[in-house]
Image: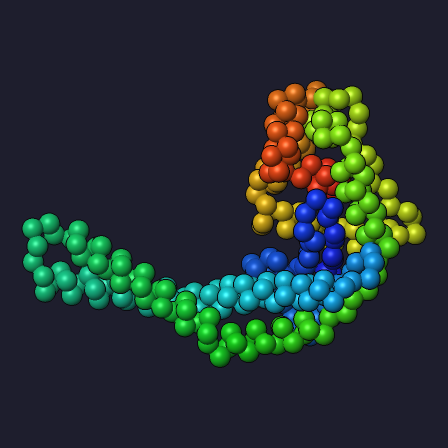
Length: 259
């Protein structure tokens, strides 16, 4: 099996390191023996390779934390319930107060919460978690880096959109200027299944890390599916772009790969 990762340079932002490991919820299916391959459109500097590996290490850490928590969920739930019951009945019998149950419930809930937090921290440092973490990171360190010419089309698209007047690009996104967004042209010889992988990873990255961009993407896609434009949306997009809160070029790329 092969896990494909992509390095996408953005003219208006930091380089994006897109990997399947960014979805921590799927960590239970990660295989330490799977080949990991990074794709970029041009040669990478030593700094970029290091950043790619550090990004992957960080995602593995989050994924293993999620995996061990899921694996130990039932024991943690039972121990938390036991802590709640023991604390509740102890204070119910040992302490008399003018308001029955209220103090006992608060203290029992606090005890259950503290036990759960302790177990979570302990599980993250357990031998089982450390072993899986090391296996995945050792495999990640063996990943290869290859050139993928088709990726250049995506980076060039970002550059082309950045060269447009922000008012024009906002109007195109909101369908108020009479012109469509630039087309994302991929030469036939460079097309392949990797495009679907890249689109999925990029959309997942935005969903996980840039909720504001995800929100605007939904709004623009709704407008793009309608026949009429939205002047208010165009003005809002332009305002956000002018104060540096929104990358219109990336938004345009996301619209193109979502269709």
